[in-house]
Amino acid sequence: MTPRARGRESTGGTQSVERALSLLSVFTEERPQLRISELVAATGLGQSTVSRLAGALVGLGFLAHDPRSNLYGIGPRVVSLAGIGLNESPVHQQSRQLVQELAATLGLGVNVAERHGDQLFYLCHFEGRLSPRPSTLVGRGGPLHATALGKALICELPPDAVAELIGTEYARYTPRTVTTPPELADALAEVRERGFATELEELAFGRTCLAAPIRDRTGRIVAALSVSGPLTAMNLPDRQDELAMTVIEHADRISSGLGYHAAPAAAGRL
Image 1: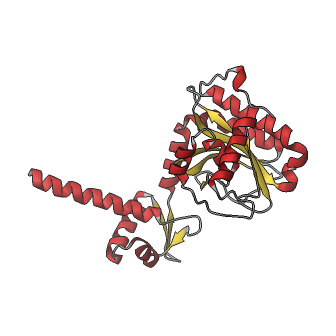
Image 2: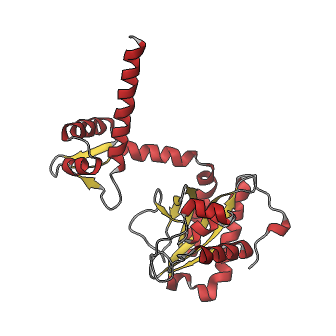
Image 3: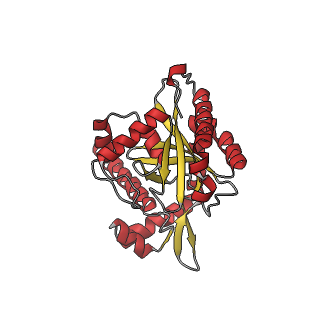
């Protein structure tokens, strides 16, 4: 094969990979099952191309196809790869059992998340008896400015880095959502002062959350741990200090597992 032929083959192969991944990226929680016509509309690719790619992805296990409804959805191979990725994460390895036990003890939702770009990304999620959910949060994203986890993840970034990361105009989810840089700066300063972040109906009505940073061996914040649930179950007016101590303690245990050893002066204050 000539160098020019190899170049054409390489370009074509890359394009096919990009098209296949664009097809997979169309599927969301809101749209978990789609028809070929919907995939065509979402990707802008031709129907014959989408049909061919969808068939290949079904054959490889990346998509599943229901012949009765003619709907396509995410296949088992994607779930398998996601599990491999999670199990290789040092934060997930250090936190999974601890988070599961804490959720059972408190009866609340307990989560661990990292920051991927301008979004948080859930690595662990277990719900307690007082905070049931119909689906897992693992793999979902979320806004940094409107969540306790997000504020814990970015609390030590300088203001210019925060602005570069998430801009200066923030989406409003409820009347309580922080929507301006000065408000967010105050909230982040409070996190640094207390050692934990709170979220009171900032993302969703009727729910609240409390989170603390997780650090790697260098002291850098690499993840955050939270407890969350309905207002009545969390009962922050009476339990905030108790829950904060618990969250900070467990976040510190994960940090220690990652090799971090805090100096006494760095401990959070309640």
